[in-house]
Image 1: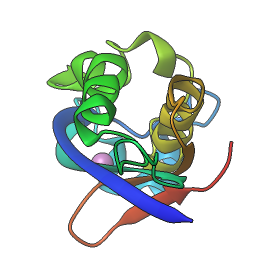
Image 2: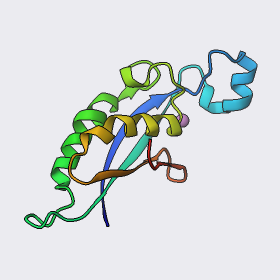
Image 3: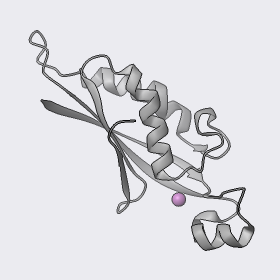
Length: 135
Ligand code: NI
C-alpha cells in the first residue's frame, strides 16, 4: 500500500463557543479561543490517499486531481471565511480542529475514487495537529 499526500493551506477565523454554556463556562473551557470577535489561523491541511499505483499511470491518484478536489470541495468554501458563520457544512458545530477535520473527511471521502481516503490532517498552529483516520 502506498500513501500519497497533498498539502493545501487556508486562512480562516473562528471562535470556540458552546451556546449551551454560560459566558463564564465558555471562558473557563475555551479561554482566549472564546473571545467574542474570534481570531484567525493559517491552517495547513494534508489529505492522504492510500492505494496501489495504477499500472498504466504509476499514480495512486494524480495529485493534480486530488488538489482540484480539495480546492473545490474545501478550500474555496473556507478560505478567508469565519468558520462559525460563513460555512454551511460547519454550521451548528464548535469549530475546533477536531470537528473541522471530521467535517472535511465526510465531504472528501466520497469524492476520492482512485485509491481510498486514508487520513485528513489539520494543522491549526505550528504545534497543534489533528488527524482523522476513518469517519
Ligand atoms: Ni483558534
